[in-house]
Image 1: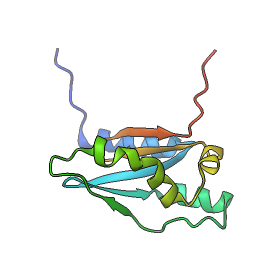
Image 2 (image 1 turned 120 degrees about the vertical axis):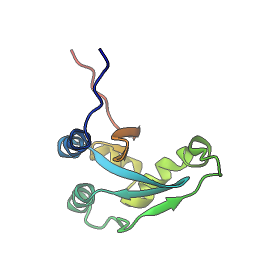
Image 3 (image 1 turned 90 degrees about the vertical axis):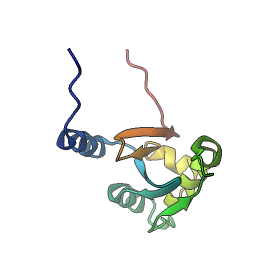
Image 4 (image 1 turned 45 degrees about the vertical axis):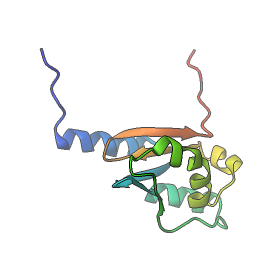
Length: 123
């Protein structure tokens, strides 16, 4: 039997569930052609401001280009830690203290990258 493709509503329900259950910071990415458009979700901004009121949280988005083939691994992935720090205004240690950060693509509904996350082994 063929696996049923989730409906658009089911897909967005899973995205909303991801945001609702997050115990870490979330940096979103959207795509305009081969350019990545990076920003923080509203809950992440609020958590940062509550924990670090003087942090220079970037209120907008950051766009990073790739080559015409869209080689994200070469032209964007190496900069993701820096993008996280630029957008959050936090040091790696501060990011870790808030549960780390994940780069999430809401359109694809998947996490592309995690950083400064402490993964606890289950017993």
